[in-house]
Length: 253
Figure 1 (tube, rainbow, N blue to C red):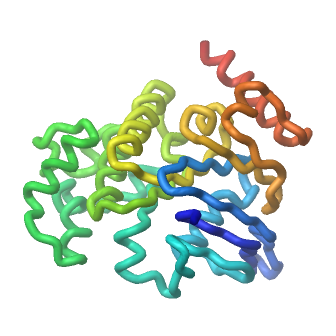
Figure 2: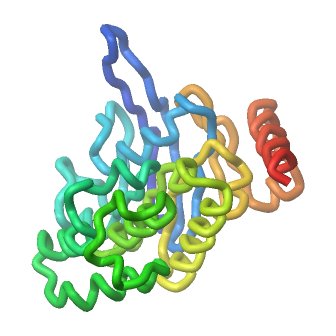
């Protein structure tokens, strides 16, 4: 049984007086401990799928199941202990007036979990940050360090699933690699399941076992890692994304 099961998902909302069909009839099945990618250009609906899972975007059709159970609306504490999301911008996702200690201990307090001091220090160590960072504020950290804090916060409740919304796109290239390697290590150590969004097939190729290519809110093509390695895409759009990612990699050399 799939850990994440999305069937015929549609997300429709109104913006500036018009109806926007952000996602149309998309189905995804992600097994336990698998890393599954969603890739496409801006506006393809990939981030909207993550937001719909979390209850941050209105589901107008279809179903979302986690562990075989339909998600409830509104999402409750049980959902939070199973599913956590890491957002694109590590500065915007952290409260600027809260210390790192408060950022990390807050989920524990909400869920009534004890021994916060030990767990906060262990969380910092797990993501490769000194425990002395505990009483710093977000503006005192670099972008990569802030994203490590965001990842640590997402892991405080020991979820089984991480939803990763372009987690490295706001970071410098060298820091991107460090963050991706950190996520890969944590996934291996903790047996995590990833559903990851990116506009870059090279990032998805590094992180994911399978990928769904999206365009204009619709699923275009599903690929396995072997398909990416062999460049065996069946659709022109998937091929164009692959070629664009390859060009960016060459430019960075």
